[in-house]
Image (cartoon, rainbow, N blue to C red; front, side):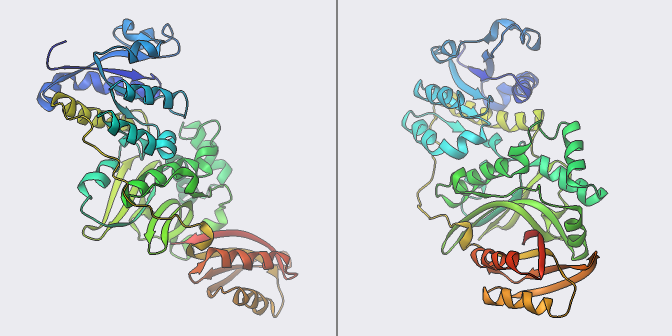
Length: 428
């Protein structure tokens, strides 16, 4: 091995793994100038080496044995793009303990056990980087850690799941219903065969847990995040939102308040002139507020082979520079606060409620009384459509605690004049 050569191992050769391999090959001629060293993939861990023999220039680099990687002293950097909790956790842990720096795109693992792995990396004086775990090719982890480090960040919010954003965009722009938009997203490869993690908000929940931890310097895990998906959003909700000057998006929100951290993922009506409202299709964006910088937004492709590979390789290049100058382990977890995470019941929002009620005098007064008795103030009422002998009401509340709106909904559901509450959506 020459003094300017750094050998790496790649764990996984799926969509992102192939992207990493391609970027590595494309960048090879410029590495000496960019890094003062040259990166070489020495080993690629796969389940079936024969199956992938035609995917790489040199099939001898393929291995089915992780032990072969972990015991090779020449391999300085391990790139993990397998995903999931296991065996990824064991592989990363063992690589760190063997003195190898790690770059991962694994949001599941970082959202739940990132603190543990960062502490291990610091102990063994190696790097652990995970830019690609959030928002694909959009650089957001590094800006939060570095470029915005001099700010007291009070809020991070964003559209960080391309599948749900594509579905909601189709519903908004083409009037599709949810199922139709989901089918199109699946046909185009934006949605998995089982889209649960996306459409129920779990994917976005893991990403906002990672960003909140970095932004507020306090540990937030996926278990702390309230998640609610888009499966109940209807074309009628979107139509009303347009009438009111709003757009419905699945928003991941982390807010540092005087009483604790709010961290949640759910559909939200946001003003049509808000920068996030114009983020369409499968694109992602993250909107950050800091005391010095004020508002900044990061926008781009949130997933896919090459955008994610771009983020992975950005981290690999950074680690390679540290390796070339023997400065590995210089990045720290930087979690030094212990701020409580608020339960969803104690957060505040305005709410959009769509309900079917009896069409007769006194109904609105009855509903207003129920809200008033539960500390909910009505800001706006719209009555537009009739459903057989009933009326459809849309009510916008003033800002209220979640537990109060839930109490009011319990009474509404048992009221004889309310035939059903179709939608409850938070308003930004």
